[in-house]
Length: 189
Image (cartoon, rainbow, N blue to C red; front, side, top):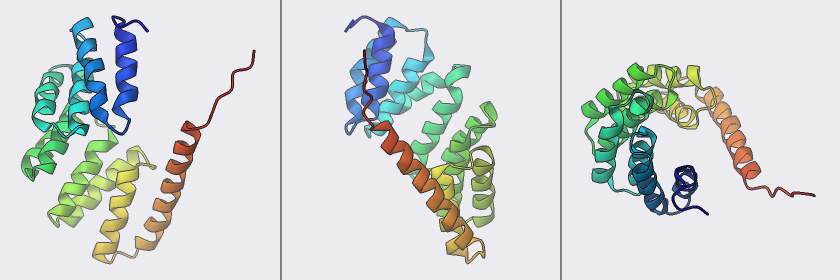
């Protein structure tokens, strides 16, 4: 491979980020940031990698830099919201998630995360509203379907059974996509 090829480093970082130890992606994204310092995607992916590696301080630093660029701002705000949520800073988390949806109104993940936070606060009406908004954008959104099912069960909503069936469908689709991603591809010459 070409160690000074920015595209290879980015691609290898993306693959490594999804492995058992996401921190394996750090050197690839650091190299990408050196090779393409003006591309905010590098800082964003480095921040996301630090997040998945449970290095929140480093993640926050990179994500704050990614906020400054239109193309990475929504995702950066989303992950900053997740960090704040994990730290129990719910108002800060909701603010970051609102910023994400302001930048990108059709981004389902921040709405799903808002729903999770509202559920933690036992604010069930705003939780349902946020989760339903996420599902309006992406009907197969795993976290939104799961948390809406849990919300309906927790509140005794008559739609709980229907949502449980819907979640099972989403779970099966997700398992099938995972199975297909592991299939072998044979190249015949």
